[in-house]
Image (cartoon, rainbow, N blue to C red; front, side, top):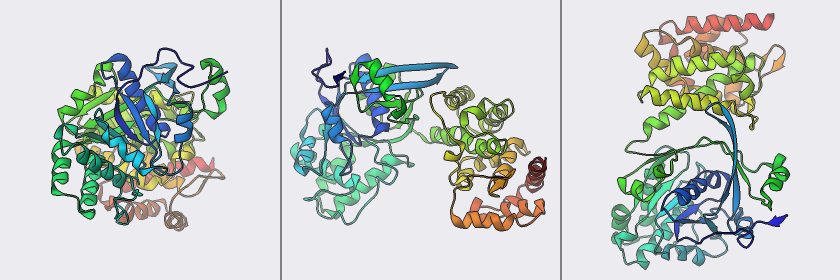
Length: 471
C-alpha cells in the first residue's frame, strides 16, 4: 500500500496560501478544510491553508509526514437515504509548530496572499492571560499568538490597510469574533503597541461571529484498514464526519465576496445577525437531545438512533420539535422544518453509535438553556402548557432519582445537585417533589411554580412514570 504524500498523487497543483488556520484537529480538517477544498474545485477561490499547531504537542508532525494530504469520509443519512463518500483533501499545505520556532511562525504574517484566519482552539481557547506580558516570547494563549502575528503583519506592510485579514473563529462560544477582537485589543494595550496598530486592527481587519454545525467523530479506528484498502493509501489522518454541515458567518459583505462558499453549493450562510441560527440550533438540535434523553432512557432505550426509530419515542420526539419547539421560533417556518428534518436524519445515522448516557451530562443546566425557553415561550404564545416538554421535565426529575426499574440511571452532574435529588426523593409525595424542584431558583433562575398549572402537570407525569416503574 502506498504512503500518502504529494509524490504519490497525480494532478496536484500548488495554490497561494490564503488561509491561516489555528488548529489541526479533526473538526477543522473535517469541516473548514473540507469546505475550502470543495471551493477550490467548484469556484475560482484558488487558495491553500497553512495550519498552526496551537498547543505544544499535536498532530503537526503527522500532517507534515503526509504533506498535508488526508481523506474525509462522509457517512450518514441525507434526505432519508444512507450516504457515504470519501474525498481527498489537497488544500492543506502543512503545519507549523510555534513552540519549535517562534520566528518561523511569525514569518507566516509576511505572506502577501494571506486573507483569512480561522480557528478552533476549544471554548477555553479564546481567553486573556495577563502572564503573556512579553510579546518577544511566544504567548501561551491563542489570542496572544494571533496578536503577535497581526503586529508582525502590520509592521511588515507598514500599516497597509489592504493587508488586513478576515478573522473567522469557530470556537463554540457566543459572539466568538467580538470576544476575540476584544482580547486582541487587551494584548495591544498590555504590550503598549502603537495607536496606529490599534487603528489598523479596527479599520483593516474583520472579526466575524460564527456558528458551526457538523458532527465529526474523527479517526475511524474500527474501520481504518477497510478504508485504507478502498482508498489505496496508508492514510493515518482519515477524518470521519456526517454529510450535514452548516457554517453561519456574521460579518460584512467583504467576507462573502472573498469566500465563495455559496457559489460552491455549500451550506455556508453569510448573515448580519447569527443569533437566530444559534437559537435554532440550541432549541431544535440540542433541545431535541435534552428532551429525548430522560424520556427514552426510562423507556428502556440506550442510543439516539434506536430512540428515534422506536414506535413510541420517535413520534414523541418529532411532535416535540414540530409542535412545541418550532412554534416558539421566529425564523421562516419552512427553514425551521427543513432543519428539523435534517436533525431527525442525523439522529438516525447508522454509522454513529450515539449513547444517551454520553449526552446526559449536566442535564439540569442543559434543560434550562435548551428547553425551558421553549416551554415558557409556548405558554406565552399559546396560553397553555406544552405536554411533551412537561413530560420531558418530569422524566428528567425521575432520571435524577438515580435509579429506575431497579437499574441505575447514568446521572452525571455536580455532586451538590445529585445529593439534592437524593434528598428530594426521600419524599413519597410527588406533588411535593414537583414543588421543590420547580421552585429551585438555582436551577431555573426563576420560580417555575408560578407558571400556571405546571406543578400539577409535572406531578401527574411523575405519577404516571412511577406507576410504570411498579409494573
